Length: 279
Ligand code: PAF
Image 1 (cartoon, rainbow, N blue to C red):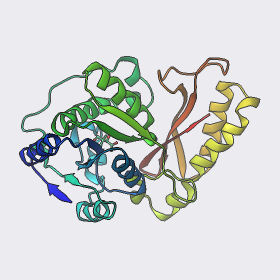
Image 2 (image 1 turned 90 degrees about the vertical axis):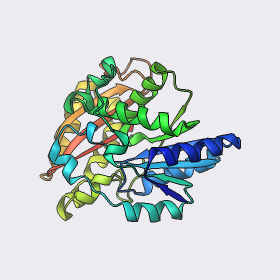
Image 3 (image 1 turned 45 degrees about the vertical axis):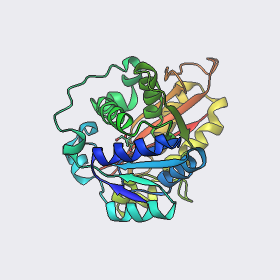
């Protein structure tokens, strides 16, 4: 496994692999890797000749400087984990390497960024667009792998790929959970013991809501989810939304066609967790 820090090294190595006819799978990450990320790497290994993983905490997608400061950084451990799943190339650049000059591009994701994460974290998806497009330009992958925990991000990346005419297949992979149901997230390491113990209540609530959905209207089930999560004194719901899985259109009535996904953002103390479930 090669660990590279500069764009030139990365582009040279990838060009050589491409000359040999190798296909490239790409897993972009912000590090603090867990089994969710490793499942993406495994999927990439199955579907590509060479797997590239980037480890880069992208400052432009954080709208809260405190959140950026406390985001976990564990590069040495990440490299060991990536070795254990036979990753081929790790790209761990500095901020200057990715942004030699500030990125002033403004993406327009339209309606897709007007709700949920886009509404609560202004500028977040613009930052995601900036870094993912830069990484796509450098890695030039055939396929890129993203986790469904960041469901809205997956929809937006697919849209960006179409808008910018990238010839990259975006593969969305299932959420990996702890045994107690908590969605794996780099942010879980920031939870104290009490919040960690209580955070699985989020997914348990989503599962119960799915089984109750046929007995309630959309508005009622959303209220039920908020009340049920907030019943736990360690949790505080920021939003609950039920949306179409491709257009993100907010569901108003169960009779609307299409697959529906219930999405939540919940504060566990100071730590903000997101999760979702297909209804
Ligand atoms: O999902 C993430 O970890 C990040 O948003 C991504 C895609 C690596 C871009 O920084």
